[in-house]
Length: 207
Length: 351
Image (cartoon, rainbow over all chains, first blue to last red; front, top):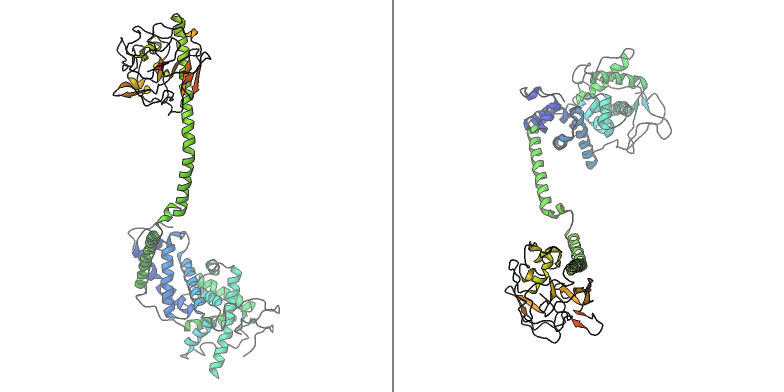
């Protein structure tokens, strides 16, 4: 971990430096760390579990866990992936307990179907209603929210981490403890399924 | 709307929702866009990376599709979320501390690593074991002291033989040994004209035949407290004398080599109690009582021929004609400290 300049403002320190100071008893450092991730982590959780109230609770649980496990964190590694791993685990526990899965369950698999084939979508051939065609529709945001929420949990998680939280595939693989190829296949499936569900929602709204 | 390009049946979850993957070209375009976004070269917010060459059209399609995700903009969290999180952490810390305290109070015995049942069992085993072992150990220690006493007595016998060889065959015997003289006065290490029988025995020390410490019984704790040398004339008091010696207040001295198996030395005579630092005859003690030196179990006895042996009864039969009580003079049942053996070969071992 880089040496911490005691005179530097806390806001200028890295996540890892702030966590190191917190381990040495500096509560202000932890407050800065929480505030730094207030928006990003909350938005991730809100999209993941589809519920602001639950996202609020899970956000607090995640940082309680960070506080408890701070002494075990290897400060030579990055803090953000660790935080999101903890938060994602908490969110999955929440979904499992509350049976929040919608159209697609956790048991859904990506890969060869029982007949040995695999279903693909070619976006160039799929007739997707895309902006700016729908840009003016006020309900677009709600539809997107519903479609994302109806994705299987493991696909939704990868899509959110990659798109909104800008995590590299390798980081996602490390955080979720899955192979890099699985991250790719899940992401491809997430986007493909999102496209298919979006098309179906849009078609039903047109009727 | 067109159908997916591949006609294979779509994998479905139990709820019936389709799971579709991207075709290879779409997948390549998506990977390139997201890699650039992760690397920070694709702008900020929901912007994706640069469109890969050759996949421009597909990439634009994916960019438009993913841009839909930006339509869902969750509201920002409450501004007090950070403070509430800190409060939750503090509350959690308090709960943990309280829980630890309750656990410590509820299970104070855990620190011992054993429960009461185990502790009591161990204590019972220890007590029973000790009660069984103690008598054995005490018996072994008593045996050891008895054997040591016999060895000391045998050493005294050798010293006595040496003395006799240098003194016309006589046992240790000083002046003033006329019958009728008092022989049970308290021993005095510094008084030359003694009136104690033990002073005659002490001549072995005074003349350098033996150390005073070697002429003692291990059961007599007083003997080891004295620091006697050959400059002294007797032991320091009645309790310091371990052995009772053949009464020397007789008309004539006998030769050691003519006494045969006659007892000449033994553990302390039980007929004489010590009161106020003086010997007193104890009428209540039977004449055939064993010495008290070894808790009344018997006594070591030294014969004139130098053999030391353990005897349960205080009798010897040196000439094979009758049992001779080693404590008393034949025919005398009451003692005033002036009595003498009935004959030269009558054992009468006195302090």
